[in-house]
Image 1 (cartoon, protein in one colour):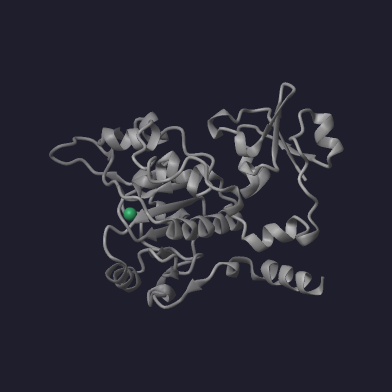
Image 2: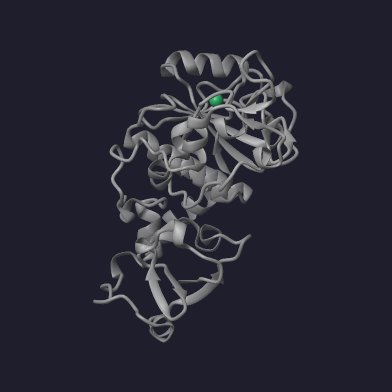
Amino acid sequence: MRVVALLFLVLLAGGASAINVSNRYRSPRNPERRVRKTTELIVLHTTEAPARSSLNKLCERGEAHYCVTEDGTIYRIVDRDRVAFHAGRSMWNGKEDVDEFAIGIECVGHHDKAMGIVQIRAIRDLVAELQRMYGIPDERVLCHSHVAYGAPNKWQKKNHRGRKRCGMLFAMPSVRRQLGLARRPASDADVRAKRLVVGDDYLRRVLYGDVDTMKSSYPKTPSRAEGRESGLLAWLRGGGANKPAPAASPPKSIAELKSRGYTLKGSVTKGTTASKIAGPRWNSKDTYYTIRDKVIPGNAIDPARIENGMGVWMK
Ligand SMILES: [Zn+2]
């Protein structure tokens, strides 16, 4: 028991350090970068270049907060509370210069190529940790192409979305599922408000439509056992080796949920997403959603079907 308690303390006290981060490419630009006033978004990029040259460039210029390589190593480039220059000409929801309110993560790879599962898991864990630290909901984990915009040029007369496709795969539902992200932004507020026009219709269909070219690379249902929590933490939460055997059939009513020790953790509303209520366990088989006398286990719920008024029950 003492060993278990000790491990638990290490994990809690560790906070972000529960994730291993290498300082090998920490940027010499750090001291000259001001502290960011607010952190509202996480922006994912793809380097479109191999690890070594990407890391050297990012470090030298201070162009990201983190870089995740194919082997799952997370490198710190610019300290997370300082401004890194990663988004360039950018706008989100009427606010320009996204670097002033976003954390940037470069992922070694290409915007239209699947990444290996080891790298995806490292990105997932880093994103989850940053979401927790800064209170960022899933729909504000974006890719660079969500926020970049182009100035008028000879092909496009207006300010337009679609300056680049950087990080595009991270908008695709199959990839977001792997990253444990239940939601993505439903539409482009800047296009809706006519601040920008659509400059790349294919990109628009990837970001907001049904284009998902990664479906075949990632299985539909990731193993919940490999959710965002480390195996150890999940084991500790579950009561370690003394965990009782799971009940034979899932609860079918609110009364049954209660009698089995589940409590209502909150209800989904416009501003309160399922992942805000349940955290990384939003899609666990041990989390239940209730609506109109129906009880739906988290591992069977379609993120698109999570509706306002749904109760979220957990132990
Ligand atoms: Zn980028």
